[in-house]
Length: 136
Image 1: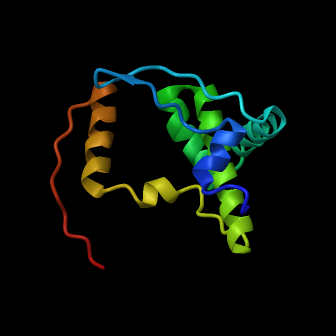
Image 2: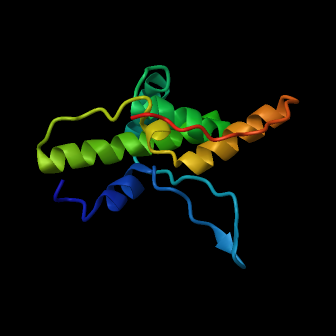
């Protein structure tokens, strides 16, 4: 891994670096780089496979595909797999799974409450909340 200065250099070489196209403060759509075709193809296929498992990467895929689309989410998960592999090789440590519920566990309570209220209102319900004391 000493060939690459950082994980960003590795991602750029592989063609999985996130695009950065901005003009007049407006972010524009951009394409990913060409990079190493075989590595990129393999990582994207691994991302599609990971999207069907119950893992952190699958949860990341679901979050991103809802907003950006499935193919962009697959490339983003492929980038995450490459970053994980880089750090595992560099540090010589085993992989520890964060879990499929990682994003739910780290969501702020106020943000979660607002999101769930919006979902119920979209379904046609009127929501009135009263706070209850929870015994711990």
